[in-house]
Each structure stands twice: as C-alpha cells, then as structure tokens.
Length: 306
Image 1 (cartoon, rainbow, N blue to C red):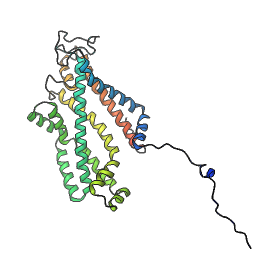
Image 2: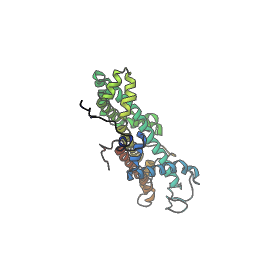
Image 3: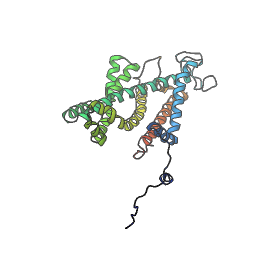
Image 4: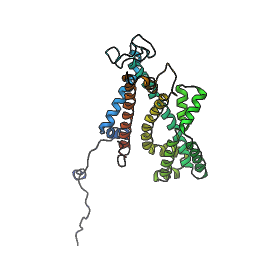
C-alpha cells in the first residue's frame, strides 16, 4: 500500500510571523500633518502666519497707544517708543499696522469661508445632478463670470457705504464661481467611481452620497484652493483701499495705511514700507501653506507650487 504524501502542511507560528512588519496605525489627518511638517517652507509659513495673527489679536490691546489716538509726535521715524514710527497725525504706526492686519486677515478668511460654502454647495449640486440642471446652473455661472468682480464691489460700496461689510459682500457675490467649477469637476470625476456606485446600490440617498462620499474625497483640492484664495482676498481689499475705495476712517486696513502714506513716500518711506511689507509677509506665508497642503493632501500628484 502506497504511503500518502502530504503536499500541504500547516506551518508554525514563527514562520507565519517572519514576514510580518509592525506598523503603527495613522489616521488620515495625522498622515497629512506629518507630510505637511516635512515641508520646511510650509511649516515656516504656518509659524509666521500664526505669529502675525497672534500679534494682531493681542497687540492693539496691550499697546500703550490707541490705533486712532493722535499725539504730538508727528511723522517720527523708527524708534524705541514707536517701532514703526508715527504718521502725519501722530498716531503710532505699529499699533495701526497690527490693527490693519486684524481687519485684512478677517476679510480674507471670512470671504474665503463664505465663498467655499457657496461654491461647494452650488458646484456639488450641479455636478451630481448633471443633464439640463447642470447646464442651466453653469450657464448662470458663465453670465456672472462675464461681469468683472470689481464692478460688484464698487456698486455695493456705493449703495451700502465704504465699510468692511460691503467689501466682504462684494467679494462674495462672484468669488464662489471658481470654487463651484472646481467642485463640479471633482464631483463629475468621482460620482462614477466604485465607492459611489456601491453606496448607490446599497440605497444611500443622493444627499448622503454627495456629502458623505463625494465631498470628503474632493476636500484636498478644495482646501488648497481655499488657502490660495485667502491672499487673493487680502490683496483685493488692499488694492481697493489703496485706490481710495476701502474702509472709511478712523478704521484702517493695510491698504488704507499704504494709501495714506503715499504722499509722504519720498520723505517718510517707513510709513509706506511697513504696511506693504506686512502684506507681502502674509501673502508669502499663505502661499507656502498652500504649497504644503497641496503636497500633503495629494502626495502623488502635487503641483509643487513655488
């Protein structure tokens, strides 16, 4: 009688674990944060922006000079008493620059948040619905895009006055269009993927598929777009203030500070250089953060913005 040969034999526990590689579990947020921290420029930009925002919040409160208080030291240069000097009315420029940072950064963040909210909602519905609904919604976007956004801002400021609210409202009238187009393209590309079809076959509602599955997978490009839209809003506000269409006195943004110092540029250049340098510093920091988020959220296909 032939003896049976064992072709398959159970292996021991030592052989089972010989190729096992122990690896700590990481959440998506932690993985993104670690990749973000590996980008030195993005980390420096985050630290610089956090420091500027912190100074803008607590600086005017602890400063011995009020932002709108006039003094006898008129057009003074940089000194220990006035780190950025004083303006033509004797007001401390360091306090006013920090107060201007507070207003400019608030306008940038608030308008970007509102534009992101409107654009994600509008573009998500258009891309998910498709067909005639998509065509009608996007043709409305094309009509609004044909009108310059500066015209909306000017008309609203003429109606509501030159204040922070009218500037933010004017930026939000057409500022969401780019986000809506980006969200629509992401939803069209993602709604035919396997995970979206699996959710549909399991009976998930369209709202759940859009919010729970499609939006979460499209957040990478949207977050990067938001970080790049914030400096655009800050620069737009500074531009409007520089041409004399910004917020009214005694409030001051970085743009109004640069505009008021224009006539003294050749005599007292510190009055112009300080607010402009702060604008450049904020924009560079936000661009570095956007670059780091782009590489962290999309490590295989990052654009590598400089």
